[in-house]
Each structure stands twice: as C-alpha cells, then as structure tokens.
Length: 79
Image 1: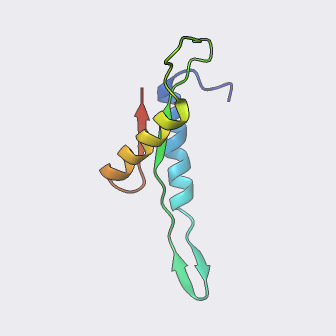
Image 2 (image 1 turned 180 degrees about the vertical axis):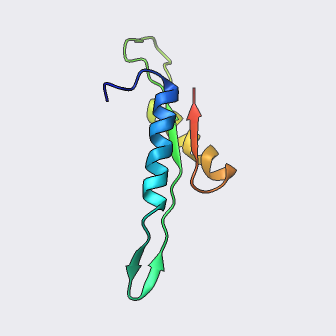
C-alpha cells in the first residue's frame, strides 16, 4: 500500500479489483455464475479528533449505495 499517494490511486486500485472480480465466472451445479460488486470509498483523517467527526464506515457504505444506484460493478467515492 506504499504506492497509494492519493484518492485517485485508491480509485484506480478499486477499478482493478472490480475488473478482477468480474473477469472470473465460476460454476455451481453446471450453472455459470458471474460476479459483480460495488465499492464505496471514504476518506478518514485519523488525526482529526474533533467532536462530530463523520463515521468513515457509514460514509463508505453511503458511497457504495451511490455506486449501486449508478449501475452494477462501479466505484464511488465519498470525499
């Protein structure tokens, strides 16, 4: 993870992950199963200790649902 320097790097990595996941269908009981996913990204400043700081898990979850609304197999970032 040392190569990740910006949110753009995270988005590029997430899109590569999407490509890997969707590229490998598998078979269950003679049925081909294709997989897709939606990825939500949020940023969290661990040095920010102020009250009322946003919840990074909730922010990522909201970003994931935004990706789902835009269509399958997408990445969305909540910055």
